[in-house]
Image (cartoon, rainbow, N blue to C red; front, top):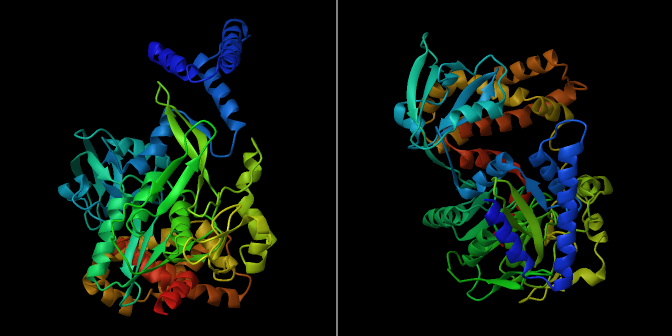
Length: 522
């Protein structure tokens, strides 16, 4: 391993000039001397690996906000969601009163195959109790996950059965999907929403769009709200499904890497009208896709100015499983916009407060405040219709939708923040999952007829009082009830069906979706 690391260093050195190579060798000698002296002469025993790790963190931490170092454990946790799978038992769960509560089993997954059901409580793993012992979520996941083919014994408490039921589950690869929702908003307008750009996202999008076309979709809403990005290649592949062949999607430029262009392969998945939804948390690959659709005049963008991450990171795997993600280039939209927002080298704290500063300045609630920060020098034109678009930090939408700070009462936000709402839903579904599933065999029937019982709302209010969460007056209490009922109905739909049904309920009065429907209807 040491020989491999040395070979990598020699290869890297060979790409620099003699002067630069000499400077680097001098710096490395200095770092080695500091490590050796500290290890040999420091008053207490030190860990050499930890010393080097801290040195790397200090070095990378003084660069841009997106260059980062992660140790082996952090690297695995970071990369698993983007790879498209992990190895485990295949359940979606939440914690109900210090007990793991199964919300859903993964279709055709290991747990479903042995008969584990939604509503089951997993109380021990391999004869070790995980319920009632204050075990962290991370520790529980560590016990449930494991290599494909290994066996884990689960002790389960099932409603209506007094004794524990035991299942031997053989772990397997569990797919990690990024598509949150795909449904018809109107008889001719479909919506897809995905949370990141991972290895499987392109295939998921293609399947979802084809399924919606079968249902009569003529226009499409691509919902990228709160999509934090992911693989650049995934964004380029998805853009190729909507842009004509040869259209520029994005290009990257860096000091030491060649300029690289990504062009559409023109797959012609969907040729109807498109509206993209973005907000202040849409970042990176989400901005690449949005910028390509906007710059090529392929569709309109609705929402608020996106996050503004226009830096490309190269992952550098280290021998112990750790990783450096080093920024090597900026990316640019087809019109030439660099969407990276300004930052100060090494000042990640200020960078992380940018969204809060936008809120405090009024940018998220006022269109004039949003455009006030953009000088004329950062105005660009789209490539076909020559419309004005803006650079200098994020993608600016064609149609601004202000952040509605009144949609949720303070009382509602406090109930949610203390997990009172989600815990109430888990208790309710624990007792009523089978009954509701039987009463509403189809989502259409559920959507049209189901109403959250008043007693569930009263229990939420009662639990709130126990935890000293109370409304300022009866008016706020009454105003909170419709919000709670909508959220709970969405959660019930999710638990019986999936996230698509959740968003169909939650998006009933969503202003971005309503604006997109208005534009596409015209």
